[in-house]
Length: 159
Image (cartoon, rainbow, N blue to C red; front, side, top):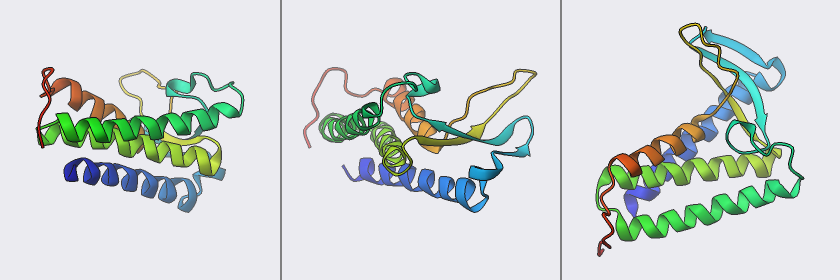
């Protein structure tokens, strides 16, 4: 459980620090756009009231709280399940990364009413219209780790 919690705390902390630094200290919230290493890395302010790629962003206000509750439920389940079933450090870190990312985005929804996204990356003549954040990276990387390094094989680990 220690690895899961440390991984969750790391992703949560890095995400919240990056949002504070870029959105507030660099004032991206008002500037809206900063080219860092164009086109590879740009900061573009985005507020996501929905889920991935803005799906369900036109939903009623209650959806904000449904998504916060869902993040908490999924995080609790992953902590319980990961502690019982994940034996490899990489998969425990993956579960923690998902938990940290989900809770960081949930905190944004509570504080701002939407998830603060600011990373935009494009390459090779393809212009990416979407923004994301460190929490999203944690969720994606964590899910990849759970799938790619699956060590459960339907068995329950004791511990």
